Image 1 (cartoon, helix red, strand yellow):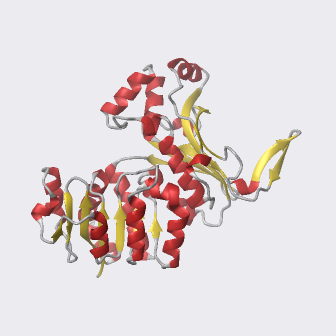
Image 2: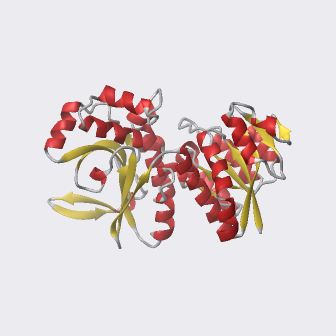
Image 3: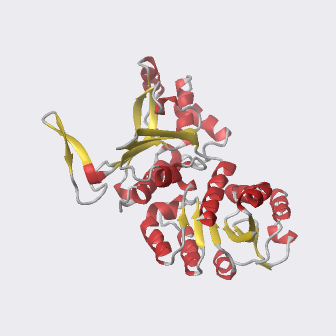
Length: 362
């Protein structure tokens, strides 16, 4: 049986859920893939760190975290290492990087990934910051070292958007990707349609855990902008920055606007969209023509986030609550649609497990 060793940077909701998923799927992975997975190092911001290259007792560690204890209290190994020291000392095959997202400079996640590649580890991440800001450099570094860089959980949590495009749609020319990429804003807009004003809907989303105490990243569209940037650079081969994404949130959408749209059979959705700028169509005197540009997504507004009126009976219009969904426009199959949960610890951890199995099975 093949044993894969993993070091885990970040032990919040997603990190803990991933550790639990490894426990839950132990028998499944052994039977289906002849595989065992050992987490040899964990570094958490609040619960300490521990490294044991023979493997850590996950059940005890998860129990300690739930009890509010330091994880190092329940197992043997090197303790109180910084995350960087832990990655450098770990004899691991894969770094799972699930530290909080930082859209300003991508740190500390970017540093963790660089060190992992320098130590010949593959990297799996759900951390949107480094992928949105530095994907091309990180991908090329991994490629040069013949390592893998997996990012499934950065866009729609566990819903397999990236693997769908890279594998199942291989050979198709994608002209655009658009959709609902933030569950918080979708929930708020749906509740406003039921009669709540914006402030009441936001408060309800916060009480249910959909929105943070500071909801700016969601309601102003910044979270979706990061995901749009990932789709542009990682999927469509662009090389654009965060400033190239035109971004508008939902804070100017009023109850009156929502109810008027409803009466007309429409709904407001916060839509993130990427249009492949290598072949942009525009209208000239009523005729649609293709305009070639030198750089993908080099034309203003080809990567955008904004509230859009959609038909209530359309695919995107049918997304309710915290659901996410994408429409991928292809040359061969036309529109391919996928929907699923866009958040949640276990759902996001599933994306990590899926990426891990992809690495192991080649």
